Image 1 (tube, rainbow, N blue to C red):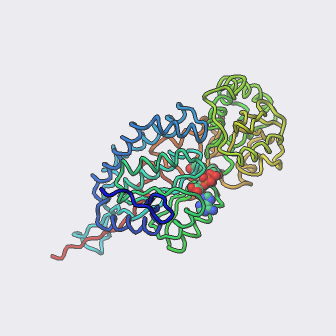
Image 2 (cartoon, protein in one colour):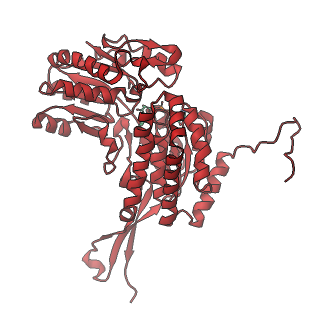
Image 3 (cartoon, rainbow, N blue to C red):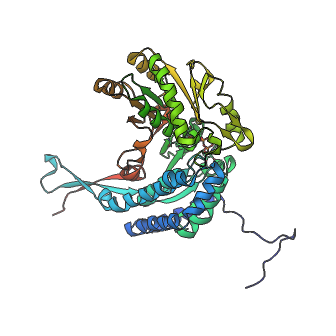
Length: 451
Ligand code: NAD
């Protein structure tokens, strides 16, 4: 071929990155051809994505380590294999989920009339992902969007640059580039994307940006799914086995250095149980990460200096039971438990999103219910109790995106449960068949024979 041309400044011509308006137009043109609709196109894309994850899993794990100090164990468990399982579950059940469902027809339409629902893809979908699980939270929604027969634009988080670069490099290599596009960038690029018309926008992140996304979507009457966060409480009853509770709390809280949207944000318990829980939590942290978590290969780091500084400012909100140390150079914050925490202290003001676990005390169950209901509806509520009455009361008298009895985080790994928030923790949900609901239009069809 001809040698690379140089422009007037003498640099080799780079292809200019495709503008959002062109990306969306190109994908919409593909969608209009009907190419993404056959189930075989959809399953081919999912199989290709699976192949990418199994072939380049180690590369992706390395990117996650570069961005978040995520251990390989964690990277595979909570991101790579998580998405592989979501793919496998979808491949296994997709035909079932897409099957038209017949509806009984009222008598006035006559006995020969029939009615059913049909799942139609929406068109071109935008997925905007955050930095904390930068692979899972981009790819799992994308699996649903593709399985439902859409074209998809994905926008990785600029705050996890190594993962963003991995996705930008490999997704186009494995997937149908006329129907799947990766747009990298931060606020300017996302703002430009949001000006375009999409058929659905799926955003994971914080409520402030959630409002920006919803405002932009409103200009085009585009439906949105908002996967947001909040302070997820963990209620510990006095009858619970505290060594089991402490172990499960510590695992859920300190995974990914606390940067998990469904992490238990704070412990809510009575004063006596709080005192007994303290040594149990010290032991649980040491069992997980040793006496100095900075030397543990399993313990992650804070995403950037801004969040490090924010979290460092929260370490003084109570009496340090375990942890409390930090190192700005390596963005390390020790797994920390704080006791005697005032509900009005900074650590109780906003979602912590880091490895700090405050213990707040209330006299009993009634006050705990009041405490929870006085605040925004959380993404998750965790309850540790042996009492059926307590379980039933918390289930019936509070509202949260999800509810976990005895084990934090685990509900989101159940593919047949919807995952999403309510109120300030978001709207809409996904995973498994719920992703098909989110990324499809359920079309009502009626047929009355002409003869
Ligand atoms: P983030 O800063 O990476 O933001 C998410 C996305 O929004 C990024 O792609 C970013 O580029 C984009 N963005 C940021 N500012 C923007 C703006 N002004 N205009 C347009 N786009 C913009 O992630 P984050 O918000 O720091 O993530 C943490 C929050 O996400 C926490 O509140 C957490 O609870 C929540 N979260 C929720 C879930 C869930 O599934 N519900 C999962 C993970 C995180």
